[in-house]
Amino acid sequence: MRIAVYSHYFVPEIGAPSARIHDLGREWVAAGESVHVATCFPNHPTGRLYPGYRSRFYAHEVIDGIDVHRHWTYITPNKGFVKKTIGHVSLMPASWLAARRMPRPDVIIGTSPTFFAAIAAERVAAARGVPFVMEVRDLWPAVFVELGVLRNRALVRILERIELWLYRRAARVVTVTESFREDLIRRGVPPEKVVTIPNGANLSFWDARRDDGGLRDRLGLQGRFVALYIGAHGISQALRAVLAAAAALRDDPRVVILFVGEGAEKEQLVARAAAEKLDNVRFLDPVGKDEVKQFYAMADACLVPLRDIPLFDTFIPSKMFEMLAMARPVVASVRGEAAAILRDSGGALVVDPEDSAAIAAALRRLADDPALGERMGAAGRAFVAEHYGRTKLARRYLEVLREAQR
Image 1 (cartoon, rainbow, N blue to C red):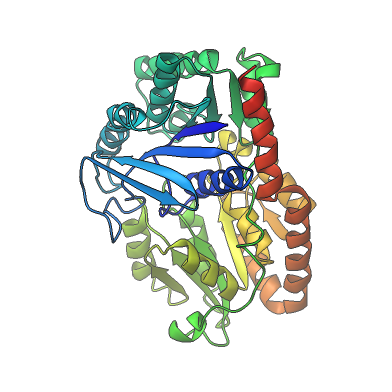
Image 2 (cartoon, rainbow, N blue to C red):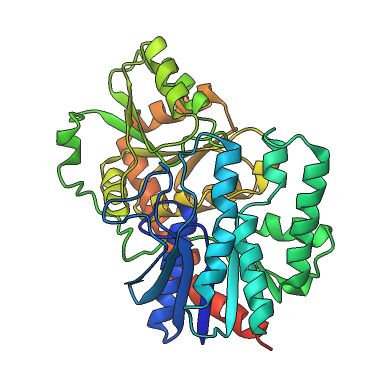
């Protein structure tokens, strides 16, 4: 089977969409399928081109057997909704041009967000007469309405019409959470059309080691209890509550909270930490996937926070599967489906979203009882191996793609 994937994000970029497509694509290649990805030049999350790449009209490369077709798009730092939207929109003509350089696929996947990658995938699928599969990783535009980013009701209605049109056009709709699936069915998408293929972890890569390559020594964190937040520093992650937890822990010299990543709110977070003289907080630049693994290996606990809004009860932060696979205890301030999974795993302490006092108490508890963290880590690793290994999920996804062709 020849599979084409249209996505704004792909490796070497870090983050959930890149990891998902790369891991699934690699499994599909190993199963004997042909995989092509249409995407842009890597720049997420900083809005700057990655080392080794330069801005040009088109480039082709092969990554782990996956044919990657990169076209020019508008690149801008993640500090303005309008500019980022222009960057996302510019993927559509780039994707259509990339389609000319690919062999005719048997099925095309468009992954959203953003809508624009999915629209490009649908249009190419229609032109080539092949099935279109829409992958829903976030509920657009609902998430921006809940976060207060979109307030123009006319624009919201237009985006909702586009969203529902894409669902109607798709032979199958793949969601990453069961809550997303239920939401789509409530809005009229036929149940037999919607399938949940959750995120997971590549167990051969996220391998539960504790060797951090000397990272703890280089950062001067010997003898400290390291609580790690790694990922986007944006409006969804409620990192101000994590800073408030750090303030509550300032009397405990054992604990340091490490923030690794980039995002629209990072400057404000750094300024706030400095203003409050939070000496138990460190901010570091984003790192690549191999370095992420070293940070996990170093961490005594990993943080998974989300904002306290109802829509986020339907979200499952994908990084939590990597953390569990690395046998790290997780402190999660979430509700809904993510909270249920983490409680079932035995590898997490779950508190309410944005409850800084509870986050601090959970970290103090793990610092007081290292054996508890070890038991939680082992339980979490076993749970992911049983339910959320990428190989199993990739096989299920292939079944969905074959069904879409019938």
